[in-house]
Image 1: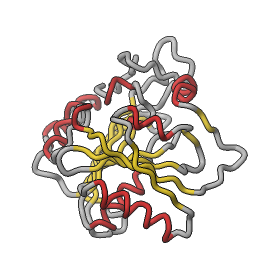
Image 2 (image 1 turned 90 degrees about the vertical axis):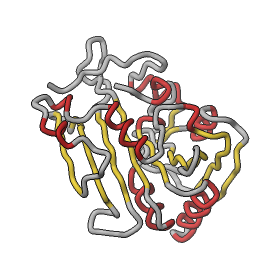
Image 3 (image 1 turned 60 degrees about the vertical axis):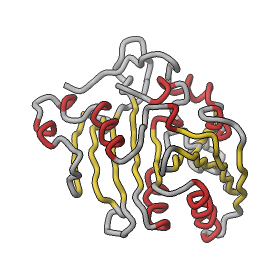
Image 4 (image 1 turned 180 degrees about the vertical axis):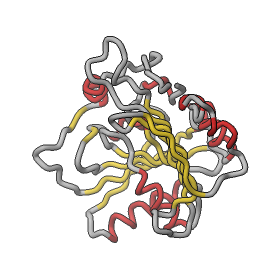
Length: 246
């Protein structure tokens, strides 16, 4: 499975959002949304280049996620990630599309290592491509979703919403689940929208960190990137020993 930077910054890069709007519009909308929720919010423009700016999300946490980062890309999309230890949630990605009257994309690229040799527990794997639009509907503002995920018991392939012209619907009928949706297909779908999801040069040098005054409950974990990778048994910089579905 292809991943951004070979898992060097996973789990931050395991789930990411892209908003089809300039950086300044995105961070202002994000901070404004948090303030509408009556949450004390601060913003800071960063001078660290990508991917080093991702470390400003540390520590990575469960239960609540008081740090969110938006990074300029080329040419017209903005990256959104949070400090969630389990990976960025799709809800803010959908909400920002509605707030800014634009499209947004949410992608997941998590190698499945739970059953790999030599791995104690590992992670449940998945590939997800989700496209959101500016108009609300009963399921967020969902336009299209394509998922190949391990749900804790088995692999599941699911598609919903309006097919897009860049898709390969014939692949969805493949006998083997692993052939129905691949990281190469996800990359191609993102490229059709102008997103080079696995290319580090796509990500720019401008970034804004949005911090909110959210208290973590006593049960929450708070880990550095290295601690999170050890806890999730991620080996950064190496091809993950992923187990693929039949």
